[in-house]
Length: 376
Image 1 (tube, one colour):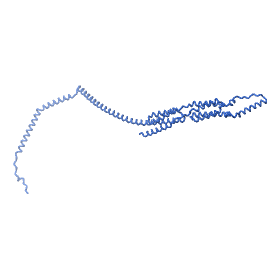
Image 2 (cartoon, one colour; image 1 turned 90 degrees about the vertical axis):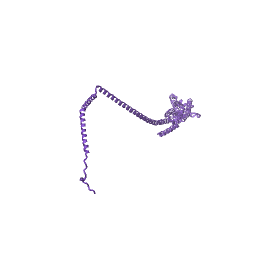
Image 3 (cartoon, helix red, strand yellow; image 1 turned 45 degrees about the vertical axis):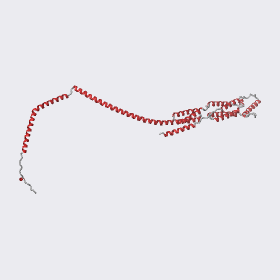
């Protein structure tokens, strides 16, 4: 190892004069710089201060002028107010135009929305109305058809019960009008059947029931006047003869009374006479009553349109009237002639049967109900 060398043993270095020279030159330069700065400041203060004050004064003057110019005069205020009003008016006009434009756009949008809503509502209402029209049309056809069925059935009953041709024709006409109002093609066949029935009813001969009844009543009056020969003599007032008194008068009066009493119980006729000549007054009254009842029966048969009973009653009345032929020939001939003429009268003409028409109409109504059930 090497041993450290002590400072005493090291050689002393020679002192250098260069740093000292540099420091002196720095001092001189600093002092010169300070002198220059101080001189410049003194010169600036000496020569620049008045200029600065002059500029400051000019600045203050300009500031006062600017402040004075900034103060508004009457004209300036008016101009400014007018300009402000103009700007406000322009702004208001701009806002109004904007508001009008927005309002117009909003109105147009609302109008379009209302139009669209109205269109949709009209479309929906139209669909609902069309559906209601279809339903009501079906219901109306069914209602009119059912009423027509009732009228046809009622017409058949009037023909069957009362043989009322006029009422049946009126009912069938109303039924045809109802079927026409339906406008349903399915009822065309039924309308043809109704037309045939109406034509058949129009061809039915009219029965003069009032005239026939009056003629039969006249016959009843003639029958009540039929009399036998002995009845006409019995009507003469047989006053008892005045017989003179005495016993012979008493015998004659007794004999007359006995004959009168016997003549009421015993009638003597020839064996060759007809049975009509053998009738007693009681049997004659009974025959007249039978004729009267038979003619009245003919009246009832005529009113009830029973042709067979009408003819049978008149024929039986003829036989009873013939019993009075020899005793009241002229009256009997007149009555028999009237009875034969009445037998030729048609009191029950053949009427058309409305059953087929009613069945056809009811069948069409059943089909219409089925179609209505299938309709959504």
